[in-house]
Length: 382
Ligand SMILES: Cc1cc2nc3c(=O)[nH]c(=O)nc-3n(C[C@H](O)[C@H](O)[C@H](O)COP(=O)(O)OP(=O)(O)OC[C@H]3O[C@@H](n4cnc5c(N)ncnc54)[C@H](O)[C@@H]3O)c2cc1C
Image 1 (cartoon, rainbow, N blue to C red):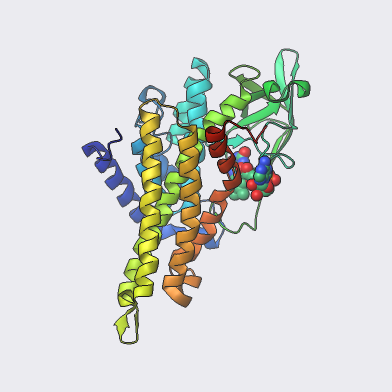
Image 2: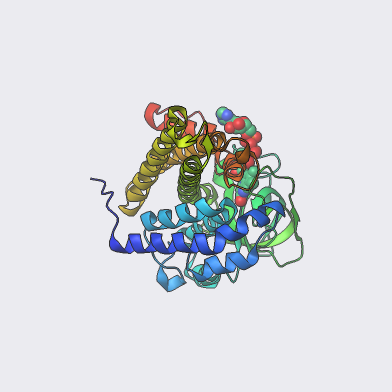
């Protein structure tokens, strides 16, 4: 039976993450968004709180928390700033959890403590200019030259790509073998042949770093075996989608909080707008979306913590929570009227930031195909 009761420790972690978000993240978010500034100082503060790599075992520098606790941290940070939440999701779920699951003992000892402490950031290089949803169809090539792996190709839309010391790079070792030829490599970014370029002009997540990577014969260390690459990517996304979903619950909650407070303050027709039934309807709809999204995230976390299969349930949580965040943010702007259209209030940023969550780590369409594959037994993705 799923137990929705939080432990005392989980409540304490949530409270700590909430206070940290309100004290450190919220006061900086508007300026970082306006200036498209990736706030490395704030990233360091997040790391100092132990919020990067929180699910990593303590012996490798993490806090060894369970997925439900991790979800609570991510929700709070997501309420404050999706750009910073993206840092937590990428480093913790896509990079650290992959190394913890697939890395050799040496690879874990080399990278995990540095990633958890924020000394090094890591990025996840799966998407390419010509390869997005069809992730098995990678063009980036890896070849063994004199006993070491050399990687050549390009990666697109890579979060933290300009600031990372480590890139997880997925590459094809044998095009004939299709997904069975894909391998995952640990690529230190400070080496000849590795270049990154900033991507600007994003609708949202403006305080997040996004890069195009170019790899020209860079050296990489194999993680797992050749042919494991696709599995590495999928297990990373199982954790990453959970994290995105939890962050979106934070956006939904932020929309509710902002709307309730605004509706009680703002007066029209000599009454607070909160007294109008149509405004109450908008607020009630946001509350229902938030509760439903949170319940799905908590279910996925519980399945992960109890070692049960959870790919489908994680996709359900990701699909629902990301779409709910877009809906809530749009509704929250409506509650705020014209004031919701400018950045005096967080709701217009919530909408811009929520929008990417239905795209990255698998679009909503891809989540639907994963969910329908589970119930029909028919794979539309092959
Ligand atoms: C800000 C940002 C940050 C990102 N960060 C990272 C990162 O850190 N690492 C990384 O590897 N990637 C990252 N991405 C890339 C992201 O994961 C991809 O954009 C996403 O997977 C979609 O791929 P695509 O953009 O190539 O779209 P496409 O795959 O070309 O899809 C275009 C449209 O076609 C639909 N579609 C495609 N195939 C099917 C199908 N079989 N059935 C039905 N519909 C389909 C899609 O749902 C979508 O609506 C990021 C993207 C953004 C915008």
